[in-house]
Figure (tube, rainbow, N blue to C red):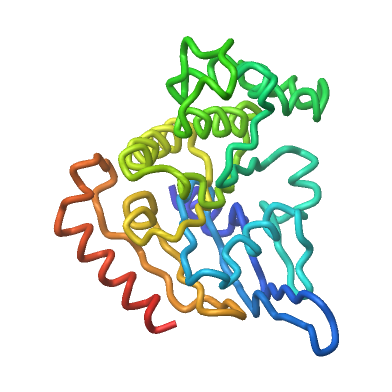
Amino acid sequence: MALQEAEAATAAPAIRLSGVNVTFGSGPKTVEAVGDVSLSIAEGEFVSIIGHSGCGKSTLLRVIADVLPPTKGDVEIWGGSTAQARKDRIFSMVFQQSVLMPWATVLDNVRLPFKVGGKRAESAAMDPMKALHLVELDGFAEARPSELSGGMRQRVAIARALVTRPRILLMDEPFGALDELVRDTLNVELLRIWRQSGMTIVFVTHSLQESVFLSQRVVVLSRRPSRIGGILDVDLPEERTLELKDDPRLGAQVARLRALLDAG
């Protein structure tokens, strides 16, 4: 047991950011979006990132996803480069808009990573029908996106992200455009998928309540240039249902989070 504990303590985190800085432009038009962010996220953690509008939340997520290179600093995925992690399909990303092919069926939209990644992507993948089952879209495989509600289209986008069996799921305000009732339902579904899969999830949101309800930790970014203004270790039951959203315990955690955000 001692050996196992020692190995766990020295294991590389799923994600490690070290002194990450992101600057856009040059000369007098230089804008520092992210300034000196260091953070470690363990395997299997659910971590949310919040902050004021324009503080660099999405920028930081794109750095992790190898979409945007940091100006300074390093990002590691299990001790390796983000470029290698992207090549190996270790992570998938879900955006605020579902970005589905309107002419294709739901099933073909979920299969899209296979067309982009070829046989290598498909060999280790989940059965697309199982991915649709995970997001509770059984019976909609042949539907077109125009026949689905906004919440159902976002479920398709999540299924498409899950079909490659990513070890890390990066989510950039995926439920921000949905009404509150649909958002609540998808929050619960996302927690169910996370528990079943054991994935590491990094979730960007504007909603304090959503971040607390979903997460084990919430990282608060300061105003631009964003730095970590605080981290809330969420003290709530592991099993979370919609009833928890009206629970005073969640309200107390949201109040603590708001204080951290206001301080930044």
